[in-house]
Each structure stands twice: as structure tokens, then as C-alpha cells.
Length: 177
Image (cartoon, rainbow, N blue to C red):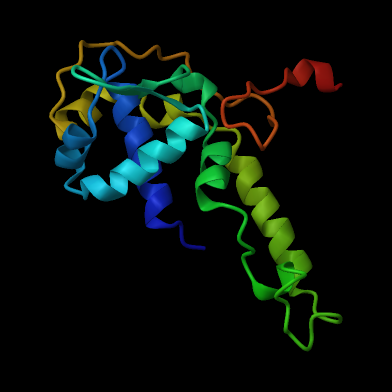
């Protein structure tokens, strides 16, 4: 599997905003920090804003920031949202399946199980898990962040949340028994 450039940039934007949490960031500074196109980042930020993961403030002094705490943003949900609903192989699409062996092929079941496992694993991690080393990231992004700003206990490795909402908290595992 190959994640799209859009998803890569989506994760980078979220990591930057998590590290620069106490202030608004601009698309221009994100582009400079990562050495990528502002036009691509504008599309990413638009999608993140539309999905409610990022808040956008317009006008002079405006910018973007996370709409939720980093420990509330699930990686599986973010990646699902940015990758979209395109089928991973032709036989997953009822409308465009032209494969002659699809009725007897078992590959689709194997791939479906594999992707379910991948996203189940991704759902156990949050943006906080990616940015626990905020000082190192800030230095590489050329940000000035006070030491210890991100709480170390803010990881999201509990349970399997609703896959459609990247900000939904994981269920309490004790309630599953």
C-alpha cells in the first residue's frame, strides 16, 4: 500500500499544528517548514477544516490551529478521511469491477481483512503519539516551543474507536467485558 501525497501532507500539517499548539500557524510557514507547495497545503488545510479537525481564522493575523487536543485525533480516522473511499482493487467496486475471475477469487477477502487490520492498528494511535518528541520536531521545523509543553500521558492507545470520526475517543476497554 502507498499513502498518497495528500495523506502525507495531512499528517505533516497536523504534526506541525500539534507542536505549535499555542498559536495560529499559516500555510506559508508550513510550506517553508516542510519545503512543499503552498497550493498543495491549501487543499489539505481546506479538507482538514471542512472535516472539523482544524480551525481556520481568516483575515489579518489569521491562520490555522487544531480544533481538538492531539490525544483526541485518531490516525486511522485521519488517514481514512484523506485517502477517501476509492477501492484498493478493482473487485472492491461493484460499478467498475471488470475482473473475470472475481466470482471465484479469494484475494478480495484477504485484502479486506488485511486493510481492516491495518486501520484497526492505526486507530490505536493518536496525533499525540506522533508528537511526543515535540522538542526534536520543533527544532527540525524551526519552531520555538517551550520544553515539556505536550503532556507525556496524552497517548491514545486504548480501544478501537468509531472509524468514521478521527476525533472520537476510544471506548473504555473495561466496558467491553
